[in-house]
Length: 162
View 1 (cartoon, one colour):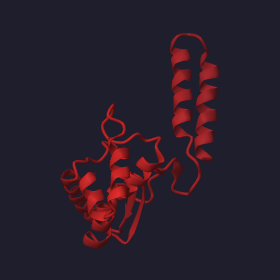
View 2: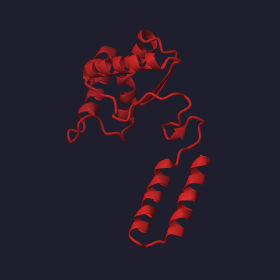
View 3: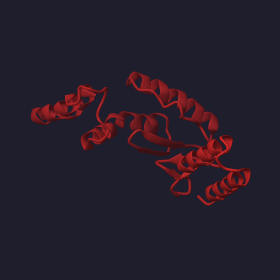
View 4: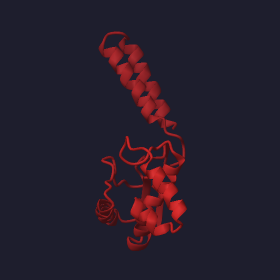
């Protein structure tokens, strides 16, 4: 991180302030996510990846917020190749892709920053958690089959409308 910052910031006083922020929390690896400067530095740190994806991989449709990003291309095979190249690029930066990273067609339902592909806020996690709890209550005999079935149908209907 410091090498990248040093390449871009030439003012010694500003550099000292940024390094103090980076070194400020010796309790953890990396930067604290609640700190506004760490959010800015996260954007800055992946800037080289942005250029790599847009300029070297020639991905025309690319969106990134912090460490979450989407690539769009008409060829799924080309996206697979890009996926592997991005993994290698990030290894050089001492970073890895999340295990949940995947390639989907635009027909798949996916979430990005808590929203589905149509821009609606996704409540899947909360719904699934509640449904899991209802399943547990049913398995323990604390609710009857009719109550559990009603919950399943209700949550299914909610998911359809998200």
